[in-house]
Length: 256
Ligand code: F6R
Picture 1 (tube, helix red, strand yellow):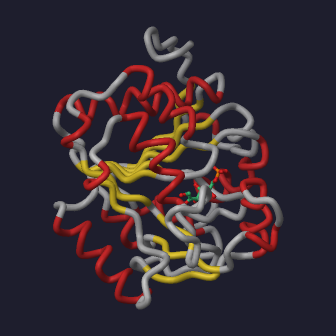
Picture 2 (cartoon, rainbow, N blue to C red):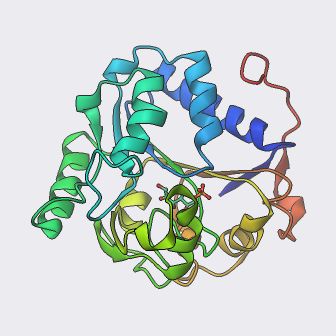
């Protein structure tokens, strides 16, 4: 893993956005894996401000979706991705794939999702956040490191964390569909962004801890091309600072 520590959360977003923009411009990224949550928001806003070349030709795959929320619900990941990614970046909605959490046969929906990723030629770059418990996508602790897209039960901790997007904890769905850790490992490139002190223990476990299903994000230790972008708060529990890159660079045109 390449670990880069940037001075602020805004620069983390700008750096990730530039990496995605460069990949799309060069043609290296034609299939982009997108994440939801707070961490990637600055990435999407920096990309939207700059604009992507020929965005309508880009294919996107979401990491996960809640089970049982209608697509029209403002917190379904279909709605969130539409609001934060598809429309601001000018993607073609028919090329934006989200697991179908309303399918009558959820297992079939998961198998079909894997098929859609394969039919698109695989994911070129998967953007990721990390949960405070070390989850990746919605692969909660003890998830198989080889798992594929499937139904998972959200932990109480994750539901509490995500309750900020709903009016109450009771409204947060109990289940989700998520790309598996094996699915995430198949992406040609992984780019994880983490900011804020609450993420520091999970980041330290992912980077400096053992490869273990108890910290699902540690699976990135097996990825041949994974980059982790951190602000100083998210990096604050790391101990092996000699191995990490401090990136001071100002990014003209990418930051306000
Ligand atoms: C989102 C996802 C989750 C989040 C993680 C961090 O699609 O799969 O793994 O990336 O829960 O969420 P935030 O960024 O809101 O702290």
